[in-house]
Image (cartoon, rainbow, N blue to C red; front, top):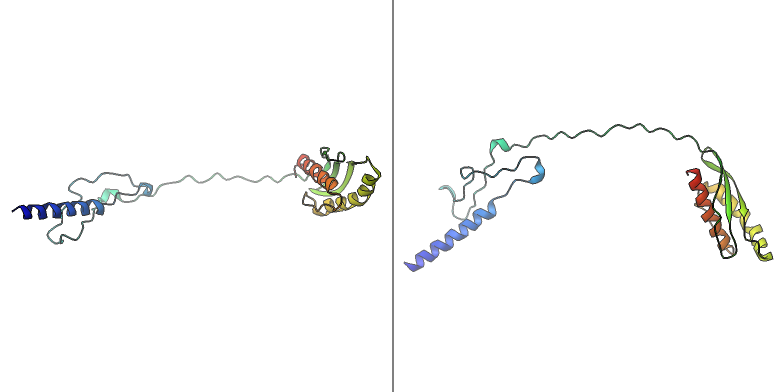
Length: 176
């Protein structure tokens, strides 16, 4: 009789584990309130029509049908068009190894129409020579791009970087 008890305990344990593993709790995100089923709503033991290897499925009560959740609609906003940007805007004096670079831009209807250098490195004749070559190109790039997306000038790297830094601050002051 001892062997029969062991088989009964093992079969009962396996059946109980199967019933536990077969139970699927309701999803939290479904919008359906989570309730614990009563013992009458789920069956832990196989019914006579089920074999011992089949696992019972939980019964969903009729009151647990999904319901539609009303979500508030987003508030409608009307975009107010910005007034066109017009004016003259001066950037900060950007410090470079050879001296400050400061840019001023003229803006009409949100586009840069002119740019000029207010300060440039001028300590040596070489500075003046580089400025004479680089600044016209930097002005052309600034007007063409109408933004800070410009190309620098090879050989005038410090002046180009100072121009860019000052231009960025002038654009910020313009709100562009």
